[in-house]
Length: 366
Image (tube, rainbow, N blue to C red; front, side):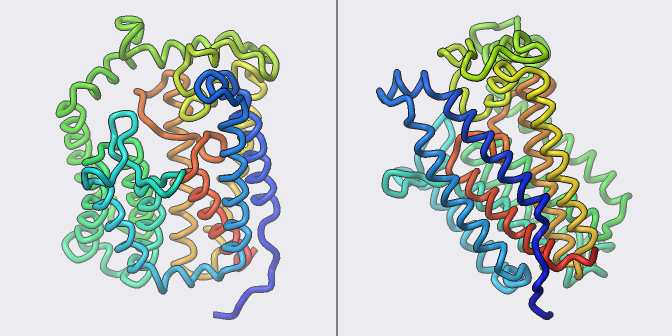
């Protein structure tokens, strides 16, 4: 395949940078009070987010110039490394425990979350396997079952941390990739039933997950316990109204909403910038996903189409889950809002994945 000299999708690039810029600003607004109280430095989270954003944008620009089929060559190695990292994080004394989950590996003053790498690693590998074995995918035993076994093995390791949110994003991304590669609808109907039963089993196996479901249905039944986050999030969104309270004027970020700069940053944004600000963010995500789907449909080969589809699906699922949780439409789970939430691994890996998507757009047959 010839190296492309086409320009990347500048609308996709500009939309990404716009979301990232808004995210950096909102991380400062949401975290300043908490950072001042905890670290005596109101700029603590802002400085770290700027560092992560700088690293991420640098990697995005670099990877945008790396031909996307290069990742196909190293797909197996990437997946093996991701599995090894997931195993390593489970080792006592090695993996770091935060929020009740052993999901982190410490690297100097920073830490990485291996499950974030697994989402992208699995997408890269599946894009290669499915593009090279497309005829097998119509067979349950020879095509669908081996892929699902691989995906569920990664999901099982993530659940040992446990991290249901990240695991659900990975599985959802892989299922969509398998489906669009040509798998039979009848197989997915049966798997949907099995998956639903398995999901119910996972919820029933952990009391805190049951509490999240009951608090989702009626958060005011336990306002100081399992329903606390949802209630405080709604107290942020509601007063925002049409125009918002004004940038920096959120009330809920003053120790009412825990860690407002991470999973619930959309609630603070809605409180300060109102309905209009929330709609702006949704519009920007809509543009990003539209340009990603466009690149997937116009990719010159099946591998590029499947890889782009995987990246777009991963972003879409995270956006839907995060905003669904923040607005009380879904049970609480730990999922960051792409490009906006504070976080090193999630932000960097998201920008890396968009870098791959931008390279695919360079080869697209518009």
